[in-house]
Length: 434
Image 1 (cartoon, helix red, strand yellow):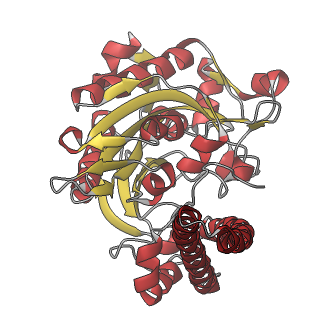
Image 2 (cartoon, rainbow, N blue to C red; image 1 turned 180 degrees about the horizontal axis):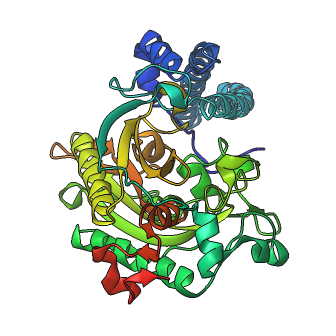
């Protein structure tokens, strides 16, 4: 599939950096277990070809301009025959220029399609590793509760108290589309309001974004072409249902030159999220562990490149604060190279312990994309020296609801019902699910 998202030439990783740091780029991509390191050489070869054609074209146009002046002078001097001879040479140069233009467009397109296959470079602190087993636990917080005899997993609790219905979702739509009911629906609404209020208190501006995006937006944040198979595609209109509010919200600043003094820009948005990849079976996908449609509050920051890792730590602390208020045991992981997303430079995952299932459930990823997304979106700012620079983009789940609901139901269950955490009670309007 082709992604015609700009009329001008695109650079996913900044090509100037690629030229002067090819070996470093390969070493860092190897940490992500990227198998196509030869792409770096192919991109540089294409770039060399592009620059060669561009020089030929520039020289050709300069020669045309010079000859145009000479022809004008010859006509003024009455040397019509000489002028006509030069005009025929100019016509040949124009034809050559047209061919060079076509060659340049072709090599730019070739290089663009090579570049979009190249993932972002991992930060130096990213640990080596091939899979989730190699992720680094940087912090663990909270006591894992001792549950009473007969404690249940969240899907059995939901059935007992009528909180959500997966079979009804199958009838209406298909597998992975739960229907929330009664206190289950009210708990969802309470969590969304709670998360949004906490984001606003932390200085984020609330956004209600579209739930479908066009190809330009999906390309800008890196969902295309990397995650094409994971999104629902509305083929008649060429739109995509959003996998996260990150996509429409980050694209608010696409094709913008921002004021440095306004950085960082902080957005928070609630949205439903749609993901096709949730179709596997087994114990890991029971209940709300993995669904096709879920609700989430997303936080996004557009940051100064010199301060983005301070911003990342701030966002990590924000998510930590939410989990502490919900009284859930959690741990923070620094993802290894092999478990990171295509576009991320550094990602922290948060996992909540599911006491009834005796396993950790991912509830949030907080990532710094550095210039990977801003380069695609052409989102820049002018620094104090009037130099135009790319911003850094960051985002995180704060929080995704399904596994938070699973954690709340399982960790706060008692023999007489499920206790609602104190901080959440003003939002639910009830203290217990029973």
